Image 1 (cartoon, rainbow, N blue to C red):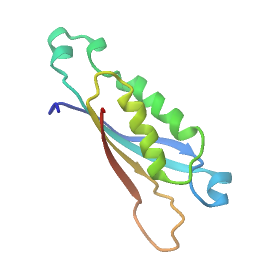
Image 2 (image 1 turned 90 degrees about the vertical axis):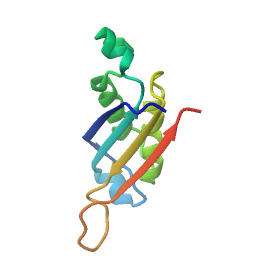
Image 3 (image 1 turned 120 degrees about the vertical axis):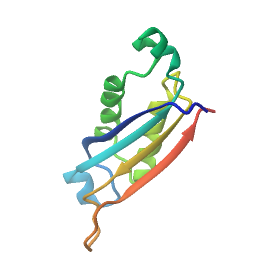
Length: 121
């Protein structure tokens, strides 16, 4: 696996994920962090965007997933986001964190985060 990384942190989007009816009806903000592992040397050598990952385009695709079809678990959402990242041919592996800062927990808390790591098969 390459030691090179591209990280996109704090991507915000509104989704309707969760097991409670209110979460599905009202929706809430989710925050996504992704770290892509890939070899960036070819892109750097040629100063060529086509030899790396366009993180602006990736951000748009990730937001579509968060805003799209609701799921019960943020673990499922994290997997869908990882699949989007791994669909980019140059990505060898990815770490995805999904934050749910407004999770329905009846106690004071700072954040709920699920983090997964996935590798190309």
